[in-house]
Image (cartoon, rainbow, N blue to C red; front, side, top):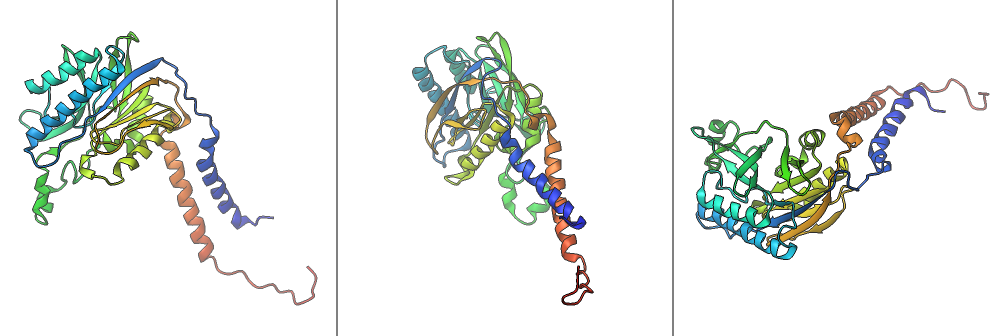
Amino acid sequence: MLTGHRVPGVVVAAGAVALTLGPGLLPVDAGQEAGRLRVGAVQGDVPAQGAHWADQARQVTANHARGTERLLASAGADQLDLILWPESAADIDPRVDAAQAALVDAAAAAAGAPLLLGTQRFPDGQDVRFNEMVVWQAGQGARGAYAKQHPVPFGEYVPYRRFFRQLTPLVDRIATDMVAGTAPAVTTIPIERLARSVPVVTGICFEVAYADIIGEGVRRGGELIVIPTNNASFGRSQESTQQLAMSRFRAAEHARATIQISTVGVSAVIMPDGAVVERTELFTAEELVAALPLRTTLTPAARLGAILELGAYVLAAAAVTAGVLRRTRPPGRPSRSGPGSGG
């Protein structure tokens, strides 16, 4: 029989087991609910470091334009509903640069489909930038954009720059700070074949690590998850595969097909149950094609949102507290009964 002071520990342990194993008992439906989207994704690769930044940025865009040509040659013209380019595929903004606009518009026109691409926006009169994914339609230009909500400190902006400059001048290698967007991570893309617009969750790069950003996009109607990223600076480290593991988690968490598309890899197609059905290697120029199920049902994780996360924190705190109390409780008094005495 359990004594009174052991019951809380058992309850905490049972709750932890339920939170860990319970989701695995829930079936994840991988089927379509709102049709399928025929998607082509281009991993264009980047040139070797050393060129002037503007020349290099233009070369990256040209690489993705050539990748789109290869994609269409293999998939067939007018066979795709959406073309995906990754974060930083067109860092020189095609909305303000005519040469870039011509490349992007030609790719969208050849595909006969919208193009979702990554660029940087520098607002007039402000020494800041936004990291954005832009919906581009041939002959019409930009038709919508999402700005990254969670820039990376010391990677995309420098907090307290004046203070840290006293410690190292390297902070000024980030010449222009990135600022956060405020709109939810969902982009609406017109799909002609489906005769409607499809809301797509667009978490940029490591926004995939933030449950609230992706979850809000799903709750706002996102039927597909796209994770555009630029892994070039991380070399051949495990960063890209760590990010892929996060994308797989988000796919299963929300029962949404997911595409992670990178400039240099790893890029992948992930089904709503988290299974990877196609992926690329690092520092290669490759293309992915997939017909992905569009889904609208919200999973328990999507419905409960931060409640599950908060519950896990509470249970963890309760487990630690119970352990501390058990260790600090004074030892029990020895029995008064002598040897051979009855109970």
